[in-house]
Length: 289
Image (cartoon, rainbow, N blue to C red; front, side, top):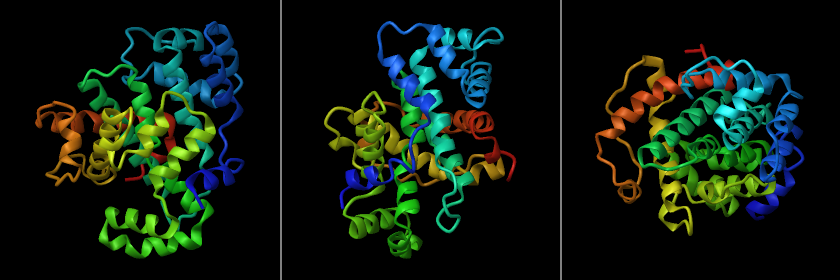
């Protein structure tokens, strides 16, 4: 078994909705008009409403009310639209995962928080296309959902080591399957033809400096995942930031050339933003604490 074969096996079970696929195709074409994109978005009332709510949120901080899909696309840009629709679509795609393995509300709480932290770290280091980095953070553990859904018996073996922490679970994944959730998630993204080299960022998040072309991006997701793990849902339950022993690789942090004190700022900002974003793109995850 390889991650590619397992991703192909579940491709029909976990496929992106037509609207996300069509938008992806249109945005890849150089002469796509805003009106063409509007017509696709409006085919799904839920996604259309989500796009408008996001455009009017503090996440973008636009100066005036956005009341049409056309204006939303003009202001946030086509690539940001694609990433937002992909984000909403992925959350809707993974339904019905057994509660034996994961509370899906907590899973998306953590994933959205990771996406927000990833975006904020990317902004701090001056990266462009930070919505792409949000999507990378959001999808960082999507491979684990495939394990849960497609190999539940084997994954029970993996979870025998869960009391020893996340590193032990990753080791167990590699021992049982021959690959880990990061490699599997990357294989799924390739099968979905998700753009902008996100597959490499996801694949190398555990060993970011080994990434051939996206080492800094993979390092950001690596650190954001660790920060989000310590933030959500524990910090959200208390509405305060505590002292946490972050366990990301120092070599990953060194690639960013940032002062250490910015971490506290990023965590505080991300805490506020992730609350708002969760309410917009995954409403059932909010209000349970």
